[in-house]
Structure formats: C-alpha cells, structure tokens
Image 1 (cartoon, rainbow, N blue to C red):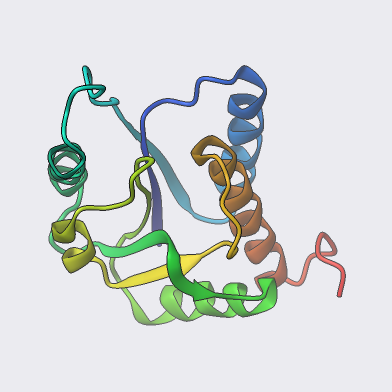
Image 2: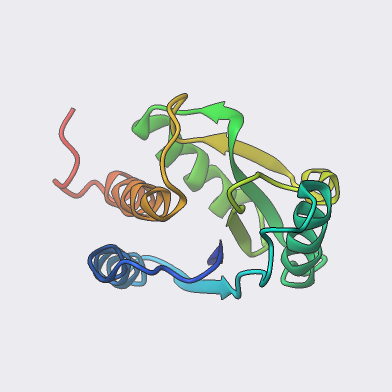
Length: 157
C-alpha cells in the first residue's frame, strides 16, 4: 500500500523539518511513503482570497491521480481517537488498492474543487494550529497508528 502526504509550501523551520524527516523515515518501515511538497504561490498579498484558493486548488488537483483515495486534513473533518484512526488506516489498507493521499491545504483552506475531489476529511483537533506544526502532528499520529496496527509498544492506553 502506498501513502502520500501532500504539503502546500515547504517547511521553513529547520527543527520542524527535522522532525518531519524523523517520522517520515519511521513510517517508511511500514508502508511505501512519499512526501510531496508543492511550491507556495507567489505574490499573494494583493491576490483576492478566492483566486488564491483556486490557484492552490489547481496545483493540488494536478498532484492527485484519478485512482487516489484523497483525505483532506480539514478543521470540519471527522475527529478520531488515535486507536480509531489506526483502525481506519488498517481498513483502508485492506479494502483500498489505491494510493492514500493525505493533503494539508494552505492557510485559507481548500477550494471547492478540492473539497469535491476528496473522499474523506479528518480533523486533528477543534483547535487551530500553524500549518507547519500540523505536518508534525499528523505524521506522528500516522506513525503511532502503524505501531498500534503492528502491536508494537509505542502507544500506551
């Protein structure tokens, strides 16, 4: 099974980037894993918000293949306990032959076209986090999910 994590813009904080690399490496022990980083839009200060979302959405959709199972990390998505998320991932592995593509949008969310293409939405929390920190939080939870699926002692409950 293949998993990809699509990011809008590169990670600018070296400490966060190091932790992303750490968890990406750990995840690769369990699945074929790819980190996809799209370039940030340029000159957005004077760009109207709908145009910015549309351009970001177009870039995102260019990275989505027709048979991907697309999951958006979205504040209005379904919240899971960690064990429930692990079960969700395990079921996807068993039932879907598709690449699972998780996507973090830009600071203004996703365009309507991206929402329309999504198969599922998850929320990490009802709280708001910086987009770069969300990357670390998600990757840690994905790694933790794999350790739960494999019965490894990383997760305590």
